[in-house]
Length: 101
Image (cartoon, rainbow, N blue to C red; front, top):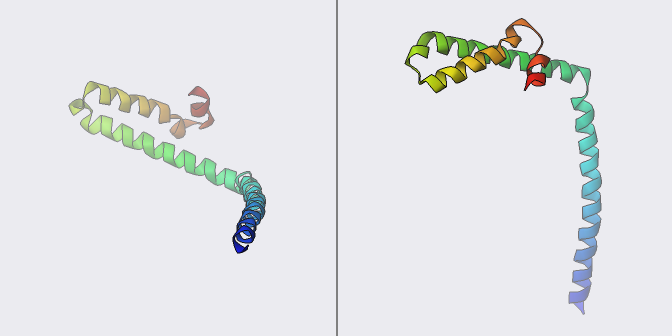
């Protein structure tokens, strides 16, 4: 007699917990979306993207200039392409790179 009551209690707990868990998940998802859309976060993301692109450009440029002649032609070509793709971070808006890809 105790076993059916125990199983029913487990089932009820699972169902109620699932609903509460889903509601909490929705709350967290909405809060994280609101944070991601905040102007300060957008600005920081933009700044970080530009900094990373600039660093990639500098690294690719340095590698091609210093050891490009020793690299396999395919590797040299890929680094040159990376340098061209990331040049926009040195000269203009990074939106140009995402639209072109």
